[in-house]
Structure formats: structure tokens, C-alpha cells
Image (cartoon, rainbow, N blue to C red):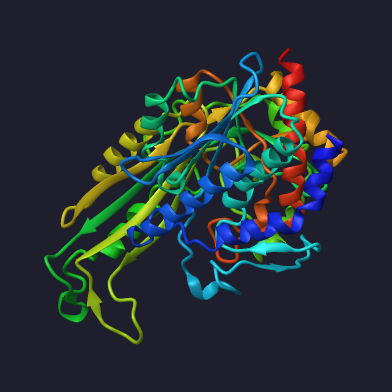
Length: 462
């Protein structure tokens, strides 16, 4: 391991430059205009996977964006780790809010990252965190010190719901067979407080449309006599939560898992400053479901949020128009035992039922995913715990995350194995937002820690 760590230390500049090259490619999976760039990114990764020492490297075609696969089978008697990551990124909009080009990576020092952070779309989610695994593998392979069999599966559709990953996993189930899945698409509590994610919320993502008159109307001539779709949509959305911020959809909470007082107390022992939280967001107070702390609201409770809303005239100046339609995108984060298809159906039935006469409502489901909880008494969790203890000098805290990674439940269903969610980013890294960034400390800490995971996992699986 000493040689491995020395190799990492000696190649830090190159590791950063390679990540810069990767970040310069705008692999936005949601926008067809970037399809060529998405493929270019897959080809770049395949090349780097080969040069790192992987065998059987191949770009697999799907009905959407390709999946990059590679492996290193050291000994069939050793445990096999499947490393998952994604190379696609969120759209960079709104571009004008970026302090530097979203696909022109730069290093800047911040209060949280005094050693510097890489600013670019995908720096943390997930190019930087995914690329750590290739560099850790390269370091181990360079010195012939790989104590497990490794398989890499890097997809290009995570940001649009991993539409084709399930099909790929089922078709190549034997090829992908493993003992555990390792991914780094999560975060730690702080750079001096390591943590391992042991729970993820599920997701139901929906688009709604409210249609009124057959054309935009003069608001003076028709206002007050014809239903305004924007007004109606706003009222319908507002009614989806009561005064306690509890979701009003009938049946929504039927399957929600209620944690014990002891479990909730343990969760709230995690280091957290509400004052710092509010200060970092420049808000006067927090808001959420009555009776729960901020840590609980963002991890063990379901939510409903409007992610986008539009309609009517939004250009410069004034246009007194009564719009013919209004639209919104809505996401619901789900907790254990909530089924995304069930919740989607409950939402659709309820939203259509509360539509007033005079408008038509269309509910279009997008994508969803199951929540997941991983145990803390398994060899894979213990290996991750020991690995982080080695590099951080502290025992990591098990923590539930508010985010969703639908493929974690998929992996357990198809492969029959658990996942280890060993991420190194921070919640303050602005993923999905302008000025996304990833600390150099975090990037290198991941590269340094991953080889220890393989070492300890191999020992604990004997």
C-alpha cells in the first residue's frame, strides 16, 4: 500500500489534468444537442480505462447513451467488486449565474476548500467522484497490488433516470456478476467528519399541464370570466401541502416507514449547525414538515417540490395576456416502503380530481426509483469504515441521504448484492446548480481511500 500511495502522490498533477479534460466535454444527457459530446465522453473513459490497465474494455450501445465496461479479473477465488459511476451531467443552465464557464474547469480557493476546488459542471456529480476509481485502480495495478477482482460499469444516463441501465444489467447479468457494488455518488458530512451513506430516498418525477382557452387571451377583455391556467395551476400546487407542510394526497403516507425515537435520536447526533446551515443559504429560517428536524426532513421524510413552472409572457416589459396553458415539473422524494409507481398513480388521480371545470389537466410521469437502505454490519460496510478510518483518522458516521440513486435498488434486485455508498463530496458543492465544484482535498482523499477499501474487503470476505 505504501507504493500505491506514493504513486498517487507523485501523479496528482496528472490526475487533475485528466479530470480537467473530462470536464471540458459537455456530456449533458438530457439535451439531444449534446449527443455527440456524450459519446465523446464515453470514448475518453474507455481509453483511460484501458491505459489504467483494465481488460475487456468495451463501449456497449443502448437505446440511449452508451455504457462503458472494463474489468480486471485477478483470481476467480477472490471477491469481485463492481464499480459503478456515471459520466453524464446536468444541464448547466442558467449559464449567466456561473462565475466561470461550466465546461471550462478552473481551480479556486474557497472558505470550505482553502486548498482549492475544481469548478465545472460534473466536477463532483459524478465525473470527479467516478474518475477517482479509475485513478485508484491505476495506482494499484501499477504495483500489482489488487486484492479483488474489479469490474467497471460507467453509464451515461443517470441524470435522466438510468433509462436503459436496467435492461443492460439484466441482459449482461452473468458478465456483471459480483459480490458488492461500489459507488461514489454521495457525500461526507464534512472534510473533518467522514460519513458513509446508508440510506437513499426514492423518487417520483412528474410533469403537469393545465390547459384553459384555445389561445392566449387579452386579460382585460377576458380576465375574471375565463379560468387562468397559471392561477389554477398555482392554486392546485399550493393545495398539495397543508399548513404543517404535510402532503395532502390521499394515501401518500400509508406505507411511510416511521423510525423509533431511539433511531431518530441517533440520527440527530450527527454534527450539524442550524445557524451555519441558514447562513450558507442566506435564509432567515428553515421550512418543512412540522415535528421533524432539518436532518430528518432531508433524509427520512418524503417530500413534494416544484422543480420548474412556466406559462404566459415572461419577456421584457409587459404583455397583458391570459395564457392558454401552464406547466410545472414536480418531484417527490420517497422513503422506505413507498413504491414510486404507487405514488405516481396516487398523485395523478388526486391532481386530476382537484382540477376545476374550465381547464383540462394532463399528468405525464417521467422517471422514478425505489428508496434503499444498506446494513452496517456487513463485510462491505466494515471495509469502507476501516478504509475511511485509515485515511481520515476518524470512524465515519453512518448517515441517510436525502438524494436518490434509483439504481441501488436495481442492483440488489438483479445481482442480489448490496451497494457501498462511499462518496467524498460535500453537500455544499453545488451539484445540479451553477458553480458546481469539487475540492482537491476530496478528490485525492477518494483516490487514497479506495485502495484501502479493496484491501480490507478482501480480508473481511475470507
